[in-house]
Image (cartoon, rainbow, N blue to C red; front, side):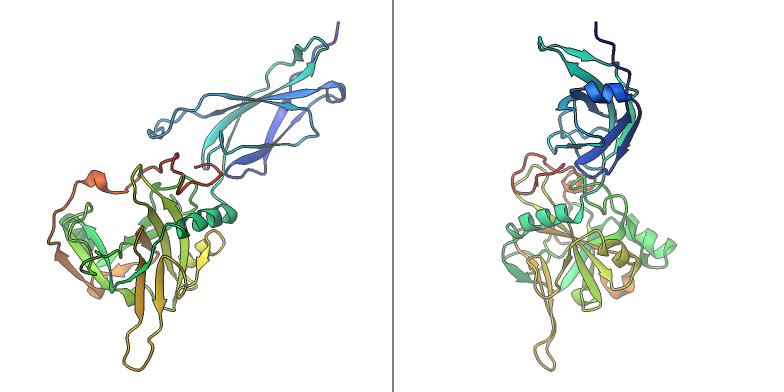
Length: 335
């Protein structure tokens, strides 16, 4: 009768990305020589706040022919970015009758996958380019909020709208989620008027600031995300960071930088002649969410009541989850 296999021990996870990892463990020389297969039991760690838009993950048992360790595990169909997983391993020897002699399962170890790498964001950027549409002129960035917000800014912050941590809306793997601070602005305009829309789900008061205060040659522009929320329209998240700032340093190694004068989403063009103004344009077919990484003072613009309706807050993108089934804005890595 063949000797039993020893239980794999000292499980280690390394080289973790948003949709892959390598796994290694200790085996006896005898088991290393005769093992024909490895079984990997991978499951998502239970979360107190599961993504309600996605099916619950079930344990995924992977069967692989024995290879020299560490073994690479890849697959966007069962691995998602920034997600905690539990993994255990089992070694096996295939018998002549097709059955397996198997070891006991190893201890369970936990690990967390990473953010999108630059190559993944470049894929997402290429997708977003195709959805951007033509460029339209605009002249102001704007930010809608409730009266309490602006009262707080005036009384407690000296008039400064201070950067806040980016929430986890959009693509789960975006490197800025929960890590980069900024102040969100919009710049989309209505086709018929060329002005900001009359309605907003974020609040009845609107702060408007001339575009040149946030978008100028002293600013670096970065692409951060492209997503939708089970709707026909899509969102593009951009970051504006003053050159050399802390936000700029964060983005430089994590996000694709865009040319201010030539990109499909948000552009700045120098004045053409004496007395001319710079030209600012935004993409027409996507909704831009622009994160400015520095504080902005209310004195740089004006706060006014919007003329339309304050829409339901449920229409906002706060902590909204990306539609994982959309073929327009998903790429071949974890969502």
